[in-house]
Image (cartoon, rainbow, N blue to C red):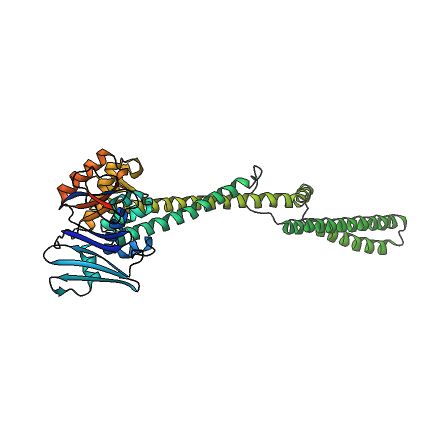
Length: 423
């Protein structure tokens, strides 16, 4: 742990509304800076901020020099001959650190070592936006990099879950919108061309059978005429017998040819015509059935994907929660969730003023063990309980608190500022 310092004396000259003030704050506890409005109380505290936290304080001050002056300074005696001074001129500001007659090089680095520039006013912690307050606590706990990675994992997982959820809802909606195929619809489409080819083959067989039948009837007629000739003309018996033999041969051949041909099914032909006529309807239903099945499969896949994304988010959050649980913070019961600081499980906005103040002081003291000094503007806004808690805690922890109070002249040990000087 680095050496701890405290303010033994404070001197301010020609800074803001302060003409010249020298005072020795209490070694621990609250030192009250009292006076009426516009007399220099706030300027005195702002002068300390300009010394210890110049980068942040300068943003709140248009011109640090007292009006009409060309030079001013704020000086802290930190004991053991260590003196820190910031000088202001019209050209800018200069920071010096001395230990006796020795000038310490890199004064800002030295000052940052004993007093990192943050949270000089513990009440500012209460007024921070929740996200900034949480970020400060993360830094105090030393979890910045680890928790940032955990948060990135959660953000990526939540984005994936959101995308998977949208995809699953889209798939479910698409599945719901598709009409169901009629009951009994086959799983595969029918081929109208194949059915048509089969019908044409049946028709060809019918035509071939009809031609054969015609040939049978024709040869039968020829045979009958020939037989009549045999009976009518014995003279032509030989010729008639020859004709008869030829006709019989032709007849037999025609009969054999007909017998060899398949008999087409009339019933199958009618069935094919019906199937051809209904092929488009059946195929449309099959397509509907296939689309419905595909939509169901996609819905199931997207639901599984969404469930996996949900699991990833929970795992990422669990990893983040482990980091938060192991966070080492300066006050027992102090913690933070994914939105703000908490104390004993209670969100910041629900905590009382005294508790918020004590937490702000504890965090500030943890960050600045080398120089545990704080300033509080508008101290009259604190109630009696908050003031008691503040003073007791500061004395117990060896912390110095300089607090401005409008009026406040009746407070024991108060320094009263009037017209930029000690009254």
